[in-house]
Image 1: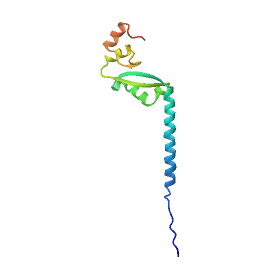
Image 2: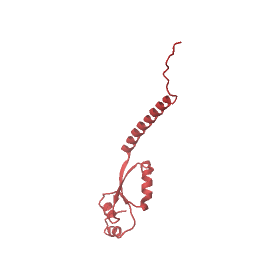
Image 3: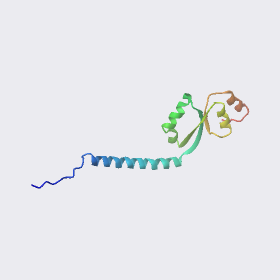
Image 4: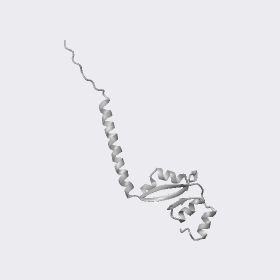
Length: 115
């Protein structure tokens, strides 16, 4: 009696190939969509401290709330709160998240901040 060797393939080999193919397609399509979306966004620079008081800004950026409004937010970090009003006044950043400090009042009093 002649024995014929069978090439057996694992039952999970085909689904794995399909899964990897679908996953690759999703990644490529998402990447293309993100590139197209980011080309349409208006870039804004937000000045802030690395502090929990700015948690809402971090969360909004991570969850895509800025992008949903057509903005590409770039967070610019400062070491002290006193540097931030000067950055806004000199247009180094477009917006800022700061508390009320003496330097903020001084710049406003000098007319260098506009609301």
